[in-house]
Amino acid sequence: MNSAGRFASGLLIGAAFAGVMFFWPNSDPEAPATSMPAMTATTSTTELEPFLEQGEVVFGATVLLPRGLEVEDGVARFDYELTGLGLTLGVGQDAGTSGDVLTFPEIWVLTTRAGATIEATTGPTAAAARFELPSDDTAVAQIEVVGWRRATAFGERVELPIEVGAAATFRAGEAIIETVLDQRNSTIVQIDFDSNSGEWHNGLLRPVQSGWRVSGRSGGGVQLLWDGSDAPSSVVLEDVSLEMRPVAESVIVHTAEGQP
Image (cartoon, rainbow, N blue to C red; front, side):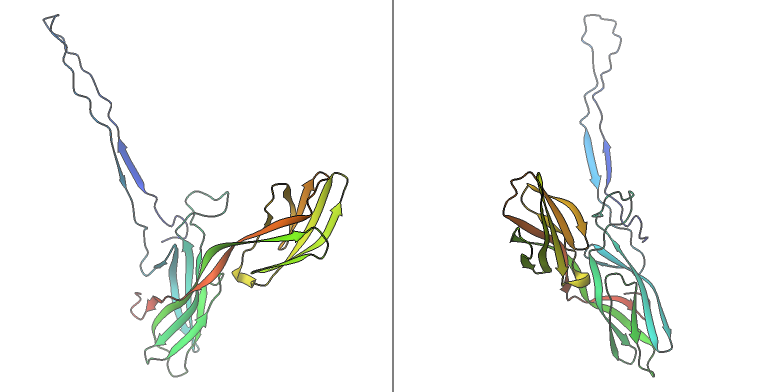
């Protein structure tokens, strides 16, 4: 399967027939005209399965496509590609492009023909798993993924007083008010967000109250603006994120015969 156009959409085949009336000439003008019976409109729907490549593995809404195994100088390198079966979360994407990848392989286990097992780890942007093989055992029997990271949505809310230095702790990090600018007709609040979740977090702070609006962002922080001179004494912040949580599930992605 190509990374573009990962799956076919459902094929809708419909045929609607309107009732057709035919009037035939009749020698007897008093005789009633005859007509064909009206036909009932019918619609049928066929759902198509994704077109799969040989050897590819489907895990949830993510497809892992093997791109080759090379063994050289005691190192086995398994190349792969990930693509999503679902819709993209972005905007402005071309029609037919693959969806977002919401599951990533993280923990791999390679088994040699002699029975030795070697573990490797990969991150969300990796395209290859690398294994250090025993010097006297370089024949690969099987490769499997035994640990994944799956995107899971979560949200948290905290309330901060509008004052410099006020801080609140989220699961993903700490929000601190760095600046408060009281102007004649508005109030600007600059908030820094110090993330502690590294690559597994996609946090984005936003205000809950309708009066506050986002007027800028910098890194993980946010700048808020309140129009008018009646800014409240606090702001409720929400962190709505996709957290990559671990999933322990084994999926074979390569065997010596080339088929998982």
